[in-house]
Amino acid sequence: MHNSSHIKSKRLSKSLWRLAAGLLIAQGVVWSSPVVAKPNDPNTLTYGELFKEVDRGTVSKVELDPATKVAKVTVTDGSADKKVRNKEVLLLEDNSELFSKLNTKGVEISIQRSADKNAIFGLLGNVLLLVFVITVLSAIIRRSGGAGGQAMSFGKSRARFQMQAKTGVMFDDVAGIEEAKEELQEIVTFLQQPERFTSVGAKIPKGVLLVGSPGTGKTLMAKAIAGEAGVPFFSISGSEFVEMFVGVGASRVRDLFKKAKENAPCLVFIDEIDAVGRQRGVGIGGGNDEREQTLNQLLTEMDGFEGNNGVIIIAATNRADVLDTALLRPGRFDRQVQVDPPDYKGRLAILNVHIRDKKIDPNLSLEAVARRTTGFTGADLANLLNEAAIFTARRHKSAITITEIDDAIDRVMAGMEGKVVMDGKFKRMTAYHEIGHALLITLLKEHDPLQKVTVLPRGQAIGLTWSMPNEENGLESRAKLRSMITVCLGGRAAEEIVFGKDEVDSGASSDIQKLTNIARSMVTQVGMSELGLVAMNTERQEYSETIAAQIDREVRKIVKECYQQALELLQTHRPLMDLLADILVDRETIDGEEFRQIVDRETGRKETPQTKPVLAGS
Ligand code: ADP
Ligand code: ZN
Image (cartoon, rainbow, N blue to C red; front, side, top):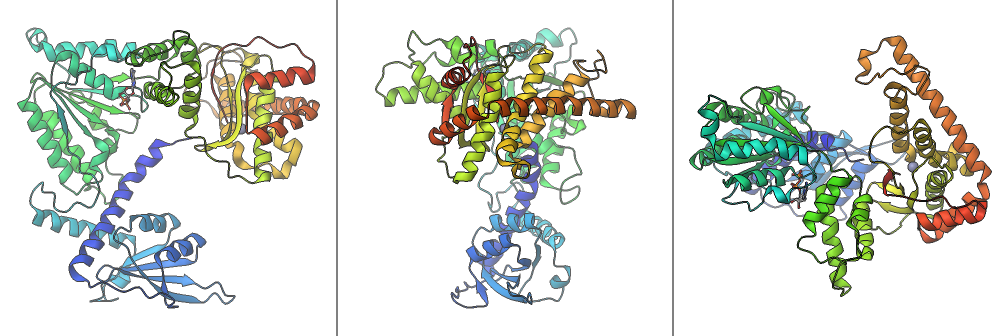
């Protein structure tokens, strides 16, 4: 699973490393003469060898000399006596990858200047020193570079804001997020006729926070508001600030608001505000980093203008919970609008928006496409139709048919179909794992029908089994929830049956996470356990110790029973499971229809009627 918060939290330190790399190079350029690499010299390592050594864990320390661009590396010998050697490595122009690798491997890093070797720097040689050097040098560079100057650009991007006089986007172009649209309709009126509000003493909001996952249409919505109101659209992305020099972000914010005020009424859009707006005082470098300065400037700007000067700020994030509370105070982003991923109706509406400029076959049912794309965001759907159009053109067809949609869904759902690089045993194991899920899906009549099963690696997941849920939401029956848990356990159960308990690998962790969630919500929210019909949602801390223990017991009981059921069903159908695994290993993908036919044929059962589609898990 993709974890964006984790990635974001790493951004800051990444940018520092990049800065460090940049500074070392800058110094190198000014003060050093190039060093010639010495191949075959036992006292040197190539850059690539250094990476390998770091990976092998033999490197304990790296001393960087920015003047010569040479790093002295302390390597432990492979020999029995574990001899420690010092080797030299010539650094590259951009060493950020190396730095982050050293950082993650916990290798000690220090900075050395050839001039005063060991005197001061050697003693302090550690990461803290590096941070200190960065701070001091960046301050110097900033001063010499002039206020807001671009000094030197080490990162690839410097945040600039964009201005569009007319976005050309209207509410009609945004679909499937009707509630958000309704809430934001008012903002259009604020921008168009502020007098209507100010004349009766109503305060116009300054900031609105759009909260929702990437691709749900937040940017599009902001553009539509500007488009409907007929005002200019200014935009900037928070993530770009953290790549910049201290002070540049803040001055960029100042410029942005200056321009915005000159162009009022207008709309200012700040994407990924969490990149600058996270809780303060938790980053590296204490209370004085780029992000904080940018955030402070933003707060100052927002406080500095009156609510009725016609500038409305819309910010987007997928996590409101990490934002600094100062941002959410009255007079700042005090309105939050949730932008949810689209449901069936929403997806249908979005599809209808995006087919406007495309030719589609009259036999193509968009309802069927919407049914099959649960979990797709607006961006995914736009992408889907675009891919389908590309397939259509490539096949010299005149209109998009279901074939192109099928291929495009495959592509969008799973990224590019990767080549199977796994070896025989791993492939078999993956096949059994997926067949374990798929066979249980097909055998358990309460479960939604199987759509597809594959062993092809796609993105993070190796092998996927899809099923098609019947209902979008609403309470699921107890039997259905149990069948979902049993199916989740099917992968592991199959592995255990075929390869034995010891061989079961850790690939099932997302299955376990998922089934634990289902089981927990059965116990705590839906009241489907001996704990009765009490809705015990919310946080664990609110339960007493006894209740928490009871919940755990109930969860474990459900999971145990389901695992037993999974094992029994699969053991009973062992020959069928082997047959299906063979086919899957051979062909790598089996679709739901054919899968069911095989199961029906082999078990002599009558086929069950099938319905609608989405992604169930791995
Ligand atoms: P976000 O800002 O939430 O990450 P975007 O607004 O950038 O998402 O969406 C990217 C593209 O996906 C849009 O330009 C549009 O083509 C399509 N899209 C996303 N959501 C919707 C929607 N609700 N209605 C129509 N198109 C959408
Ligand atoms: Zn699985």
